[in-house]
Every structure is written in structure tokens, then in C-alpha cells.
Image 1 (tube, rainbow, N blue to C red):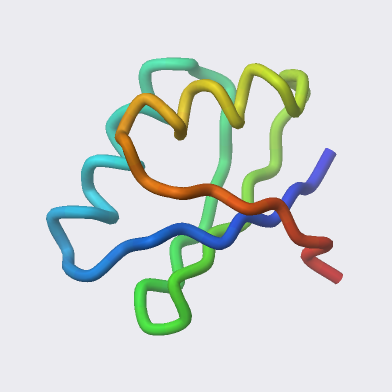
Image 2 (cartoon, rainbow, N blue to C red; image 1 turned 135 degrees about the horizontal axis):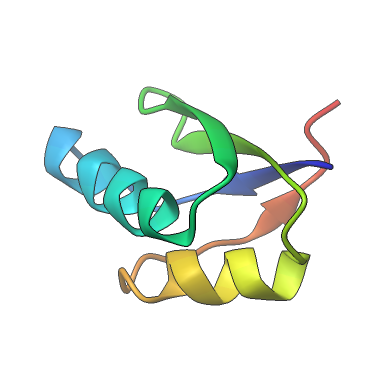
Length: 67
């Protein structure tokens, strides 16, 4: 399932931090748009797990429809 998130990322370091926690979950494909502070995740994991995982970075993560 594809999900979109808006994340408070200000630099490459922020996006790398988000990438690292997502990679630890495994079986997750994602695209990060640092300029627009958004990323889209394609994963079979539950939305709750993904939100909790990204939340571990301390970044605000409002959900949005990626369509």
C-alpha cells in the first residue's frame, strides 16, 4: 500500500535519519522529496507501524494522500 507523509525535514541529515529508520523496518520502498518535505512509502506494513517508526526520529509526520 502506498502512503504519503509530510515530514519536517530541513536538510540531507534529516532525510537520511528518516531513511535509516525505514530501512530497519525492512520491506519498505520509499521516495523522499526533501524540497517539498514529503516522502511516499510503498509497504505492506501497517500505517500505525510506519507512523511510529518515522516518529522515532522526532520529526512531525502528518499523513497525506499521495495521489
